Length: 482
Image (cartoon, rainbow, N blue to C red; front, side):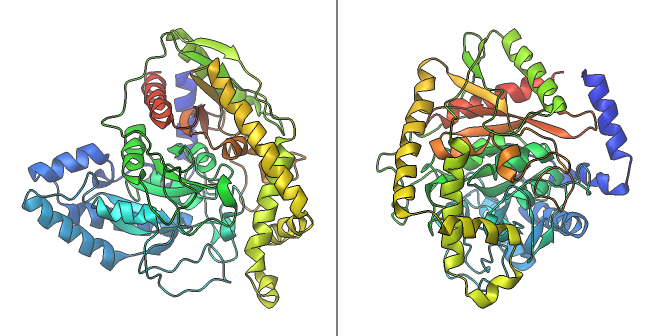
């Protein structure tokens, strides 16, 4: 599909309903981090005015698409006023001072309840921040509110018994993906500049792909996490944004040590001074096109291969690669289902009747695994992770579609008529990177024949987040030029 056809398809989508005006951002909701901070510095913009504009946008988006679980008007305006005073005195506290940010309802935030999308959780305000939220506050970020998730973030969709259905701004009859679906919708519609998500099997990258934004799953341990996820060490914390540069700035702030996160590597990750320039000229790029489950939709395949040709035209050596994926789906299911069983072990049986039936089903499956099964899964995972890491002896980066499908109807866990049984089958370009704990970034690379976003995933070895993000920025510029 050429760019003219893409534009025509996108216009046909946008003309269907007034709701698509949500993709046309208000003026104060358009600037990225650097533009905002520069305008605060020279007095051209006020953090209070910018925050109020984003709060109004969040209300509008929530009414139309159900993206938020909480909007903290008073807290956000109070933080914006404090930021404005710091800028007036020329003493910002960090690189995000006055920048509006949202937090997924899977990350503990002081003063807000942590419901995890479930009626079974306590609605009392939390007494302390998780490490990632603490780092954002220290940088001066203005926290707008919490974004919606499915119950306990168990699937790559965003619907559940507490918050209902979150809808895609490209077409409200379609899912935005998940489980960071509320965050992705907020990013796509300008309800905040930066958005904190979590990713246990694709939960940042899937909704980024479905809504046409940037989502980065960092190397495991780069962003400190506490409390530990019940799904264990497949779960990562990372940024969503409309631009690669903004996601990169957010990751820089989120990168740090916290003694509460025992899983973090005791060795520090390399600091970043600026997003590094990346050239595809001479780069060795492995192209992964066959997922461990399911098939790739024709639209996704066509747009992905068009993007690959553009990368190759920029001087990259492009070769097909087949990751060692035999048994990866079953391995992920064992770990994920066991995590679900751990979640439900903390919920009284009398409270489980109103929970998501899909979550209950995988928890029941998780209870049937033995301790020996779980230990064996850890060994198999280590072997898989080492094999994935070894691929980077031959390649600088791997690329793949982010998802095998385009957004599909809300209310279903798999596309209707697909013959698939579980969300992991259509999201199977995602979860292997949670097993291997490698950095992976989804960026928009095209549109389907229906004008819906399609994402390309860029993957690097552990620790190579800036290489991945540098390549994502180069792709962003390349794809925007067509």
